[in-house]
Length: 351
Image 1 (cartoon, rainbow, N blue to C red):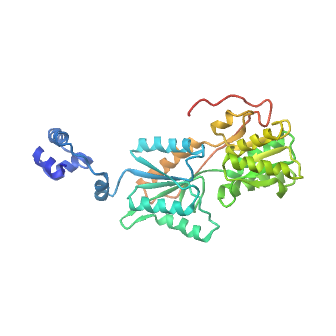
Image 2: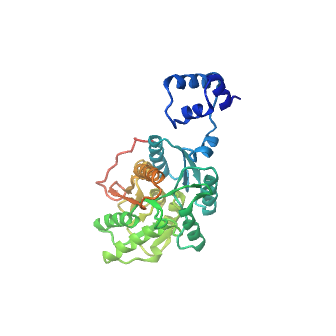
Image 3: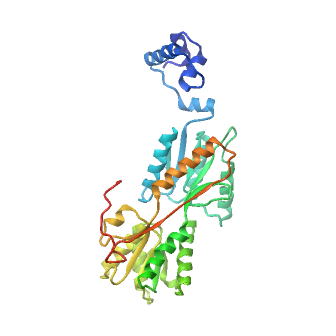
């Protein structure tokens, strides 16, 4: 296979001239550039991106680490990252952790050794855990001996020194619960996201604080923990129905658990929302396709991904800039799982 020396020899130019043409590092006359490009074409010379990265300290690659490819929440986030990456000239590499922090750490180390230019991380690390806290702090000095690799956090504020794009999870939960209260519900159960992670605890906090503010009792028996999946929502709802404590509404910490919860209610002969109303968070497209369609709190998923890539690009251009946290707004979407007057329109766009 031809190398840069053969290209330079055939074009009758120096190796540095070929490098300048390929990397656009210095101006080259149109005549010389034409000769180099003709030689590259004839010899079918291909640049090794790893080798180029080692020389320039830049690979034009960004690593993205997410908990799951199965959660319907993340495709829109990844689309936003991808489209912003194209705008800024980056190739996106995506990795899955299955919610395993040790697997997450392995992916981070791999990207460090691959000389990736930056990382966007939807972390499941818990700041309350000593080991996780040390790992989170290490992200502030992320990189290898010759290259600093900045990190932008998705969804969570991991550390006071790490850039992040988030939504206010307490506020999103409060929006959902206030909607149920406005409909006259006073006994509201909660299917929580995993409480070992920050999102789960923040949404639980929002639920409790809103209930207390309205003068309503928070009953531990009416709080069940799921794992984000529809089947966990199904089983959590089944367990709630077995309890002696009666309730008329359920706030699920994400749509997938809310969908599973509705299926459980229908299987048990309950009417939704006449007997029990259900609301979720995320506003994912499957929520519009079930019967009844699920009310939800919309999270701007595409914008979250796009802003994360934008923030990372700004950090890579200026490593010394002040740390930035972008908080995106959420909004209530009312469908027929909480109100017969809610929307029944299917979402047929973007999937």
